[in-house]
Length: 195
Image (cartoon, rainbow, N blue to C red; front, top):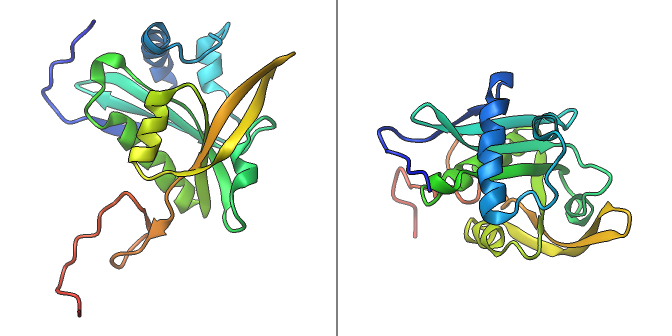
């Protein structure tokens, strides 16, 4: 397994067209280790670039792309958007993955946080569907406070139904003046609050 030498902090930035090759390489490493995506796309760069109306980010660490996430409008097969209670529109998180050699450094959390912040900025709530058997991803979402909505099924092809767990980003908290932040952000009091 490759090791990453830590010389700087990871950061999340908008994905650029030039990043797709590196994203495909990381996706291949993820697929080899975890089986994600379940069905390897014929053209992985095109699969990553898909998503009309969406936005994508990469996590970069020491000049290398080590993760990816997208946020876009609900698609025909998405289950989670239909489960969000009345309120803000839903924006769907997808194509989330982190290089196996870079895991354990909160990169997945950083990518999810960025997608959720963008959804909130657009007055939407980030939601996602995850294959029910992906216990590592389920553990991540639950550890970060994502709200479990329900289970459902997605049709991935003729006669291929897949069980999914559906999640929504934590509700927004306002803990100080400024833009709302997703709930995982911990409020740090700037003055003593009355008891």
